[in-house]
Image (cartoon, rainbow, N blue to C red; front, side, top):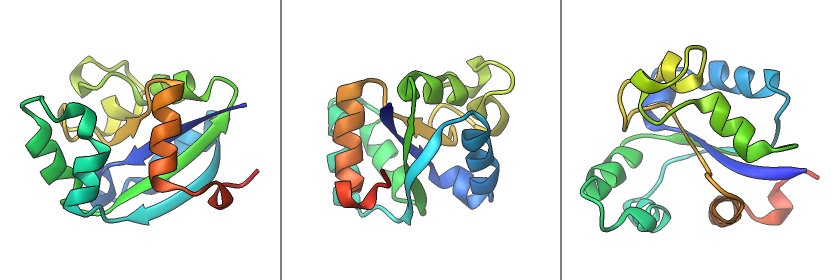
Amino acid sequence: MERTFAIIKPDAVARHLIGDIVKRIEASGLKIVGMRLVRLARAEAETFYDVHKARPFYGSLCDYMTSGPVVVMALEGDGAIKRWRDLMGATDPAKADPGTIRRDFGQNVEQNATHGSDAPETAARELAFFFRTSELTV
C-alpha cells in the first residue's frame, strides 16, 4: 500500500466542490486515511511551497493558498500517487483529459481545484507537514 498527499484548493472549497471531489476519490478505490479542513497561515504556505521559491509564481501561489480554507487529505491504495495524479489530470485544466477533476472543476493553472504529491519522497514530506502518524488510520 502506498500513501499520497492531496489538497482540495481554496477555489474548489469556495465553490462547494469538496463532496464531489471526495466522491471521485472514493469511487476510484483510493482510501482516505486522514482529512482536515484548514486555513494556511502565510508562513505555512511559504514553507510548504519552498521548492518553488525561485519561481515567478511563488508569491501569487502563496497568496492564493492562504486566500481561503483548504482540505488536506492522506490517501492510500496500490499505486496511490499515480492513481491520484491520473484522477486529478494535467495541471492546466484546458490540457487535462475529459473526466478528470481538474478538467471538470479547474478554472486555470493556479486555480485548478487540487494538488497531489508527485513522488514517494514528496508524498512523505507533504504528509508529515500536515499529519502526525497517529492522526492517520491504519
